[in-house]
Image 1: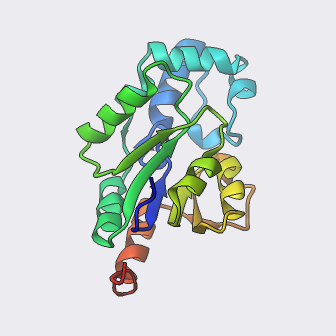
Image 2: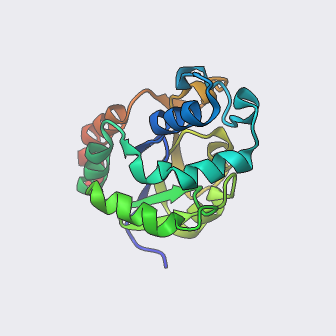
Length: 198
């Protein structure tokens, strides 16, 4: 169903949720390798830790890494600013592989009092662009994964994409890079008069 209000769409992991700290701690405990997330220069961690992606996903599930992720600094303020600017807020996350992905994510959003209107899950490395296309008008889309942002840039429905700065996405020099969610909140608040017509 399409709504008349345009959307702000957030990724979840390492955008609204600080997953990297908990994932790093879990991988240190499980593998004995003390590799700080600042050294994660690729999105896929298999080579760095010498284990399979399936094993990492198994451990994420067993050690409840999603459930214990903390709120990213500025996340609540960014969602609140989007709502104040009359946007619908959606979260699109690649957690569909997790057997309880939808319920634990909805619970996490509620627990952290994030006023999200809609939640969508896609498979890991799945097609977020298909969800964005279905939503209709997406004014802003924020993600940390280049593989999701590049396809979104090709959609006429998506007006602006933002790359949240992380070590694993620094090879891109073309996208609008945010260094914190506070930057996005400032952008919305500085354009509040423009968004008032929505």
